Length: 333
Image (spheres, rainbow, N blue to C red):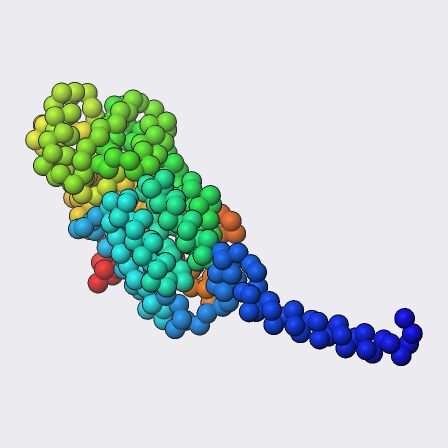
């Protein structure tokens, strides 16, 4: 090539590059659809553009989830973003709610995974479209595999261990762990860890938590049949209240403790009807879940560093029940 041919050659290369760029844009860059979506959603958003969908497995009337919702709402207000909260205790319906969030244009999804297997496909569909996902409350063992960028909650195994150790410290020797929701892997993990840490013997009692009369009757029957049971570990505040009633009906002296706090649980602790509760701080789960998502969408910041963000466990007994109660009243007030 001679020196006088170089400018012409450069001109041809520039023209070719321009044509290639135009064809690249017209052809949609020839990238797979999932990569196109991921690239589009990688652009940072302003707060007024953020639309977050929160999908939980909350059952109607469960005060625990009222605290989660309060945290969600407060974080949305503080950050000036739009949040759409929906829930269903039915895994299939929860999966549908996730799909609906994708279809409605949510650019971030927060989900609790009490039944991970039932939600796997829906969550992965969202991730494949470039929508970031945060899991809260349940799903600490599966969030990475499903494509979420962090999990906000407590380790059920660590919390269960704390419960088993506390029952042992209280002198209990024979306990019952009441599982109120079939198929909820988090509840099973709590009981398994509590049993392992407990110095005495512990067996599981499966009940239907939505049937309050049936749950109370099952616990009463268990306590009447075995007078040596000296501890009942509930996994939810409402079940703990029923266990206290069952204890009275059975004429049992068993200590009753629970996971999760609400105002009734804290009042029962202060009144001596419950020994202690394992608090995973639901308000923080809702608030931090939204905060983590907003930072991801508006700043590109990924909290957690590839690890879960723990909100518990904290043991609440008479020594700190009042201050916890005061805080909860503020959260829902």
